[in-house]
Length: 89
Image 1 (cartoon, rainbow, N blue to C red):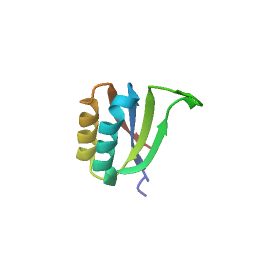
Image 2 (cartoon, one colour):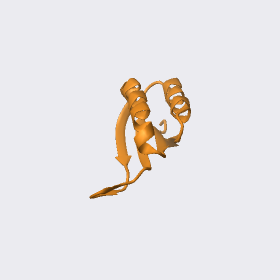
Image 3 (cartoon, rainbow, N blue to C red):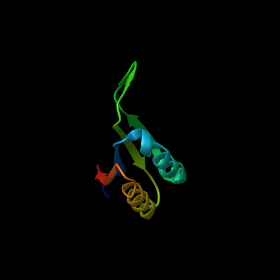
Image 4 (cartoon, rainbow, N blue to C red):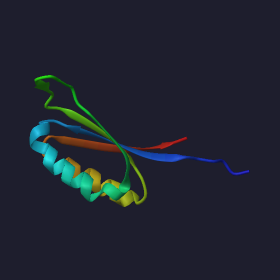
């Protein structure tokens, strides 16, 4: 009997200077939206304070070359750092 292996691709995007980079990041996430199954955005914010740093977690699907393209384009934005990994279960 063959082993059932589940593979998930997860990308973490750290956005420094969130206010300056947000528009470009959002544009790319929209462009690659068909390859994003799940998106979670995190940043500290309470009342008048809103952190300049944000973290976005993506679960990616489908074409792996598109995952790599997205990662490269995100990393080309000043103040953005993106990495992805495959998790096998």
